[in-house]
Amino acid sequence: MLKNIDPLLSPDLLMVLRSMGHGDDIAIVDANFPAAAMARRLVRLDGLTATDVTNAILSVMPLDDFVLEAAWRMEVVGDTQAEQPIFDEFRAIIARHEGSNFRLASLERFAFYEQAKSAYAIVSTGERRLYGNIILKKGVVRDR
Image 1 (tube, rainbow, N blue to C red):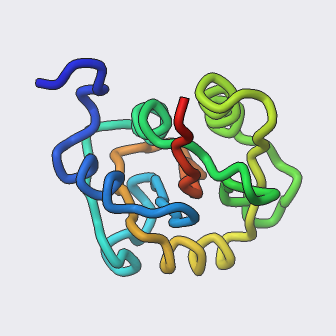
Image 2: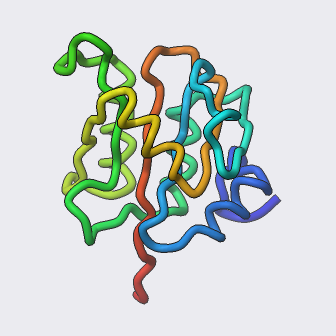
Image 3: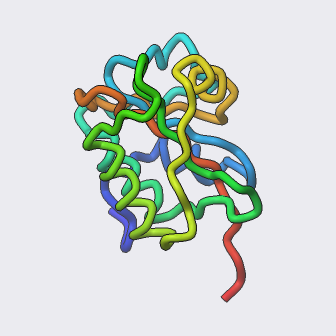
C-alpha cells in the first residue's frame, strides 16, 4: 500500500502513468470497446467502472493546459448532440480535479478509435454503460 495513492491505481497502471510524457494520451474505455485490438499498451481493470478509473487517474495525472482540448468522449452514433448520463459524470470528475477550465470535447466514433489507437495506452474497464469512453491528454506537473 502507498499513502495518498488511490488503491484503484494498479502497479501496471502506475507504471504507465509515470512513463507517459507531456502530451501523451491515455484512453479509458468501456467493456464493449475493442481495446485489445487497438492498444499499443493495454491495462485491464475489468472489475471497475470507467468513471472510477478516470477519477483515480486524475488524482495523480494533470491534464494538458497548453492545448485547447485535453479530454474527449465518444459521440453517440446517429445523434452527435445526444447526451449520456456518464458524460456528466466525466465532466464532474474533470472539474473536481482540474477545475472548470477544461471541457469534455467530443469525437465521432471512428475518430475516437483513431485517437485511441495512437494513445500511449488504453485502460480497458468493466464499464457497462454505453459510451463509457474517455481520452485524456497528460499535462505537466509544475513546481510549487
